[in-house]
Amino acid sequence: MKYDTVIIGAGPAGIFTAIEMIRHNYKGSILIVEKGVAIEKRRCPKAKTNVCVNCKPYCHITTGFSGAGAFSDGKLSLSHEVGGSLPELIGEDYAQSMIEYTDKIYLEFGADTHVEGIGQDEEVKEIRKRAIKAGLKLVDCPIRHLGTEKAQQIYYAIEQYLLKNGVDILFGYQCENIILEGDKCSGVIIDNGKKVEEVRAKNTVIATGRRGADWLEHLCAEHNIMHQPGTVDIGVRVEVRNEVMEKVNRVLYESKLIGYPKPFKNKVRTFCQNPGGFVSQENYDNDLAVVNGHSYKELKSPNTNLAILCSHNFSEPFNQPIAYAQKIGELTNMLGAGHILVQRYGDIIDGKRTWQKELARSNVRPTLPDAVAGDITAAMPYRAMINIINFIQAVDEVVPGFAAAETLLYSPELKFYSNKVKMDEDLNTSIKGLHCLGDSSGWTRGLMMASVMGVIMGQKLAAKEKEE
Image 1 (cartoon, rainbow, N blue to C red):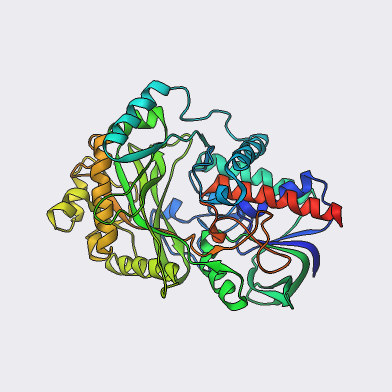
Image 2: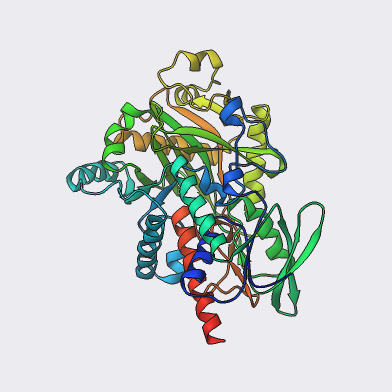
């Protein structure tokens, strides 16, 4: 097969690359290769079974058209201060202008026009005052909430737009390797389990998301693509009653708090807050089960969940941060017999495990029904656990009741965006014709910034075609 541009991965970075190429009158042929299925065919059996059945050959929550975005809570962060380190590469002002540009594209495809977290400046000041007193930084980021069910409709509209405008999408194929000729990438090798194919292309764009971060790391090592071990996030998902988070949910919708708790002073932050949301499970390769959270526009629970993530940066000689995080996840899964572990905060402080009967009589009932009560501290590294405990105590000064005995902690919550691929501001890697985008590249974290990176890539490839 021969194409002008081949895009590996139909997540936000990949599909927004194609959208922007179309919008800028790109005349060449475009192919998107996706391991999963079309968005209208993505189904999670858990909706009927209430328990994870560990789908093979991949998890429908993380894989398929629109990637993890289809089943996420669908929050678009509208500030350059949130979503990774892309502004360091392209500049903060440019990043903010591209967020606003990309947001308009989402609106064109049906995103809700309402923006959360704006218009209540005095109340935000009061929350920030309490955060400062607790030694935390508050990032008050406007949020456009798509909602889990609405996000699927929006991405379906995008899928149909791409098909109608001549983009070929090859489902059920995964990328095995890139094709190198000297110092130039001239395409990829793909496989659907029955047939191996070569796709030759002038431009190769890899946008495989967090799920593909480990694969891309190995690819970089194999072909000497310049990269550096980046940050890996290890943490927990916290669940409390909505009443505890009521003011923060109303004023900010998502309270992004950052701290550097003693004694280690690692960066610890809140992430992906879901008012009235549900804790969920995602399955990665090698049967690794990790916890996440989402929220719907209509269906609501009595709880709010959010992640608390501890950032780990490693120095020489260690260079396998993703493998390190995976080992922690595997150990936690072992303790939970393949399920997500959940423990009450008070039990952690008291040095005891949580029992299922204790959860049944608590004010905070788990929204992940097949989570197993146990002891997450038996698998969580000491450094990360101490960071998380001290951070929760600081957040309690901002949100009284957050550190209540019945607060639930689920584990493992892992974010695999390590392996930062070295690129210039035109998103060129050290290999000619090869570009790496989105969360797997190590430069972005989340829907909006991954989409922005795709928009920039699409514009640059369209401009490159005109120059040629």
